[in-house]
Image 1 (cartoon, rainbow, N blue to C red):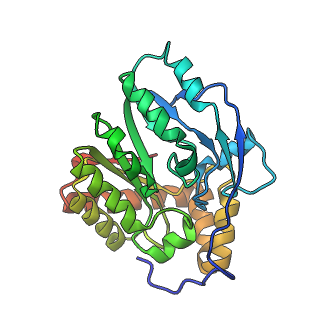
Image 2: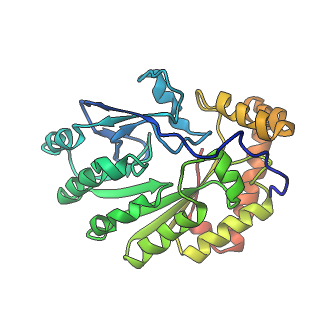
Length: 289
């Protein structure tokens, strides 16, 4: 578990608003390996997570702004979904796979909420995963179904969370989402990941994460390691250089040296299994990757 000092960000920690553009989309309900379908009403995300795997979207939607500082709002998402629902067979929908459906801009546009209402009206099941307590606004929508609400938690150390995911809801607010969803009779899930090598991936840290999962009585637990996805490393390297320079070479080896990475993943899986078994959660656990 990380117990050192965090170098504070330069200047104010206030997050500047992202550049928001309204754009049309051709489809909004798309096939995915994360379920039957995925729903993404936005391209880009205001949470500014350093490790965000969705950075690859910049390959298809180039922007002058860096990832985290722009959001494209798919303004016709509801109308497009209505058209697609004329032919789409009901199934599970992951909300969302390439953005956070409840990032701050959703408070104004309400596209995720309106699309979720439509999907439920047509017999689809929703599996939401978010870092935002804005999802609590929509409990009235979800409570009418057998859907599931989940949150992503990378660390229990708010100092680390403020660096790696600066505009997401606090860790405690995310666990509050699980508590409120459970009280509403919904199934719940938690994604622990990506785990941060050398910062929050040791046995004590994993035990603490699984204790919180046990306390929250979640139905499903996913755990994921930090992965060398396209466009992620430059952002991770910048943060390490600024705040954890002693870990920079370690991260390079874990991400890009095949032998070191395999050894790291094997040891990580063993630690995760021990934590899950200790808290009697092994049957609810899925290791990603």
